[in-house]
Image (cartoon, rainbow, N blue to C red; front, side):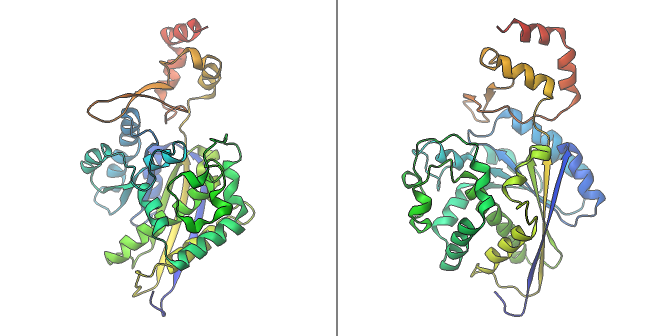
Length: 332
């Protein structure tokens, strides 16, 4: 990095409860210049048709409308490689859900990014990056909190495709125990990837605005990234540190990086959640099972949790639909 130039990072935790379809208008109203928005697009099972339609209708198309001819970017992230933490036969460094890329190609200003690249980056980390990451894992105690409710898989991190430099203390843990800590490191890497692209394209003279759009509303996954005892400052420090560890980044001017976290609704209303909690194992046709992956074969998959849904009027209509209620009540 150039010795005479500085990187400044500011983090904004917008942990309000939003509808995803309203985010583009919000970003436009606050005059966010060239926002680079990150969505968890393809899950650990792959991209379902339901999720594809949800994101297209509730974000990708509204962004085109809100920003019209203005510059922005949407990063559609593939989480497929993360399945390797649940199944040791899946290689973290090479697992990609390929059927999503032809879909992304038809969207303007959208870029596909795969999580296997993160695990490859861990293997390729230079000495400075390794030192920074190990220090984060040792001193940022909050990064482990998100894994506390996860049930152990009985798979040691030694058994999966992680680099040896993480050390025995880390690698001896169950894969579910390290889940949130790895997600924290991944988010830093993603921000740096976007900053790097902007610098390489000579487009970082304006602030680099990175927007994480995370499922969960007020209880969004931003809890994985924000230290509640020292909000925003710690994350900004770690991003700055990772940028400065990059031996290939040559700054020719100061760079300002702003990172925003917004949570959006994805669950059905509480009335439906209550019904399904009681009836889940007897109502496989409702919300939980039967989604089709985006592929030629369109295999049927089983989801561990409800698919991403907006709290849209159609859900309210379901609550008043006598056929829907009859089907729910018939599940005993």
